[in-house]
Structures are given as structure tokens and as C-alpha cells.
Length: 373
Ligand SMILES: Nc1ncnc2c1ncn2[C@@H]1O[C@H](COP(=O)(O)OP(=O)(O)O)[C@@H](O)[C@H]1O
Ligand SMILES: [Mg+2]
Image (tube, rainbow, N blue to C red; front, side, top):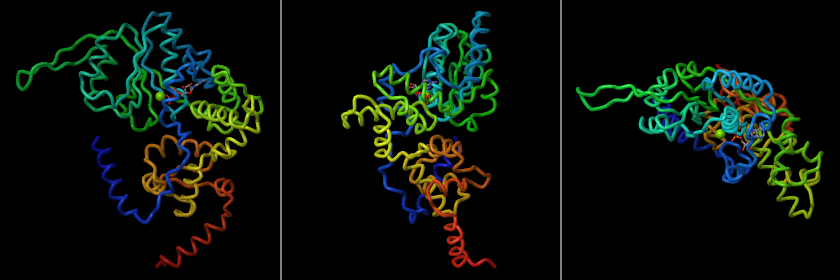
């Protein structure tokens, strides 16, 4: 917590110092931001796969999970606690729900920021049915007091409860039903090691492969009753950042474009035109992604630049930069993470059509301004 506080204040002072740096204007394509679910996504629960068979892609992860689920069911035990790691929109919440469904048990959802007081956690854990899958989203944001309570709950299926106050206070242990904790995070590095070590199973999501993205788009189109041609689905899949949430959002937008363009189905032409209007390029980059690359190149000579500084320069929260934009830019090989910060790769110059001469020119300028001794 302390660290977070410090980071906050640090950010503010840096913001002041960075006044000369103008963030890009605010009209970036927030439509696609898979960082947080839109109301539209929530309403469309119908798109969420209900069981492992409908849950497409993530083959290795799924195969392992299927073994653990079958084994737990055979032993008539609750499934071991499950830790889900991955960028937003890849299916962590969905998979937690699928696990509950496959186990045939209840599903309870909350997120770490919603667990404010010990009684919030106790209220849930003392009332769950046996073997319930209890999902905590953003588990890296748990308060220390809640986290400590959770350790004992996970290990012994008991809660430490303090009654009374002052010198007469004492702790009693309250038994709770065996349950499965599913913790999800976009930031595995921010989860404390005692918590991590209490998860029996750890699963890391990767961006979806092209063929899986195509299958997801076709499945969603079927459910939403949208006609889409195969080449259009292929193209859309390529532009969806390997992220099902983005694919589903783009699909809805393409339906809008098809309607306006008086096309009965989503054709390749509709997708090409639609993506152009949304400023999404052939790598699936949004305008904001390109802005990030451009800023690293033009203001920081290609990097390295620290995440905080970069976030301020692009006018975005550091969390959003790190959780949403960066993983995909790294995946596509456009930027690299180094101990000293983020750097663009030659591919980024190519993609933006900026000659690498540009860096040399800039270095010369820099040389004039800051003469080395
Ligand atoms: N494996 C998958 N197959 C099909 N659709 C998926 C899959 N994973 C996710 N989705 C779709 O993407 C959306 C976002 O997934 P979600 O579980 O909310 O992501 P996360 O919790 O990781 O941010 C879901 O509503 C679901 O419709
Ligand atoms: Mg989620």
C-alpha cells in the first residue's frame, strides 16, 4: 500500500515537471480498449463460453485444467486454488465461470477493491456452499488485512476472527466450507509471494492464435446472428490483438458499418473500410498504440524510457499502459522491455514508416544541446 501511495505522489510531481510535454489529444479509439468491460460486453453474457468445450484456444492451459478438474471430481474434493494470469480480455473471468460449471458447483464473484473490511470477506466465505468457486478479480489489489485472512482460509478453511477490543480482545477460528479460490490478475509481479505460493495451480494466458481468433469471431457472429464472410472473419481476426474481448467489440462495430453501408453481411470490404475508420492498422494497432511508439521514437530517441515517464507523455494511466497496450506491443515485437525501460525495435520504425536516419539526426541535435565532457 505504501508503495502505491508513493507511486501516486511520485506521479503527481512528475506530472508537474512534465508540463512542457503535451499529451496527444483525447480522441483515441476508446471503443476498443479491452482494459475494462463495457456495458455492452456485460449485457452480452450470451457470448461467454459456458464450458471447456466452448472455451476456444489456450489449448495447453485447457488440457491441464481438464485433468485437474476430472481428478478433483473423482476424489469428490474441491479443486485446488487457481491463479489466472494474463492481459485484460483474454478470458480469465470466463474461465473461472467455466471451471465452476464443469465442477457443477456454485460461482461467487468479487474483486479485490470491493473487499474493504474483514467482514466483507467473512460475509462471503461463511455463507458459501461446499466447493464453491470463489472468484477474486484484480487480486494484486488486496488489502494486507484481507490477504492475511485469506491465507488461513485457503490453507485451513478457517477464518481468524477477532472479538472484543483492547486487552480483552481474542481471536477465534471459525470453520468455513471447503472452497476453490480463483484469483485473477493482469500483474502477477504485484502479487505477494505468500499469496502466490498458496495457489496449487497457476495458469498463464497467452494471446490467442489466428485460427482461434477466427473461430471465436465465427462463434460470436453465430450467437449474435450476424452474417460474416470467411475472408472478412480472417481479416478481423488479424486485427483483434489476439484478444477475444477486442474481437467481440470489433464484430459489433463491423455490424454497424455493414448496416450503414447497406451490406447484408459483413464482407471483407466492410471490414477494411470499418477498420480504416476506426484507425486500426494491419497489425491491429489502434491510434494510441502508434502514438506510444511515435512518442518513444520522437521524444526519447527510441528509448529506453521508463513506464511512468512514458505514461505521462502519452497521457494515459501507467496501469493501462502496462496492462493493456504494452503486452501486445511486446508480443508483436514492436517494443522491448529492458531493465532501463521500454525501447522500440527497428520493426516499429518500419511500421510507422519513419526512417531510422531520424534517430541519428536527433542524436546530433542532442549532442549540440548537451555537450559531453
Ligand atoms: N476462450 C474463449 N473463447 C471464446 N470467447 C472468449 C474466450 N475467452 C474470452 N472470450 C470472450 O471475451 C470476453 C472477455 O473475456 P473475460 O473473461 O471477461 O476476460 P478477462 O476476465 O481476462 O478480462 C468474454 O465476454 C467472452 O465472450
Ligand atoms: Mg475479467
